[in-house]
Length: 297
Ligand SMILES: [Zn+2]
Image (tube, rainbow, N blue to C red; front, side, top):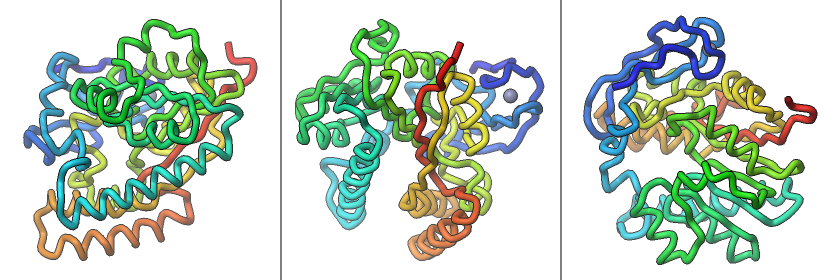
């Protein structure tokens, strides 16, 4: 285990325990989420060393609920995935000045394949070897491992995307610097993360599936995401709700609680979360659309 001695966002050394959470998904081990006294950024601390992190991903479920399973859940999941990929495509088209896209944490590559089929120049980055091979061999995509990001690739991108990925990245500051240097000056980055200030997070508390410790190292709010983007020379220009996530996260949270009628409870929780979130634009998960700040550094 490794303890951070400074807040990754502001560098302050003082933080308090915010919540104790178990790894309900896999190991049942207990972890603490701390909150920075200065900037209120929340992060899992202590956390597994880089060398230990791999074992927390060793589940068939984690790579994908994707390509092989049958049954109602899989059918619903796959159709929602198709719908969400199409809506992400429409969203990105609204901003893009060109047609090159880099997806960091592309998993098995279904999102990038959708773009490639529409004539985009695509690159993926994926640390998981099995997922990377699937995207190479089955989806025929150009996919690199994470070390590629450190090689300062010369080709700049119109669009960089991270769909529920940034909360997993051990060196978040370095990753945001890499993203900035990979992005064209008129490019856009799209970062989707769970929102730890959402109504469903408040409702489920330590059972909220969005915490997903220790795989999730950071527990962003709208405020702290905007802070870390600003720190790295980005300007957040739009915050977009992901309204299906409240249902999915509620369903997992109900599973962790082991209550009866978990499908019905999750459905009600998902609706309630979306209704409550409307006023403060504080949904279960949010997409942050950002561009480079002018005159940064
Ligand atoms: Zn801080």
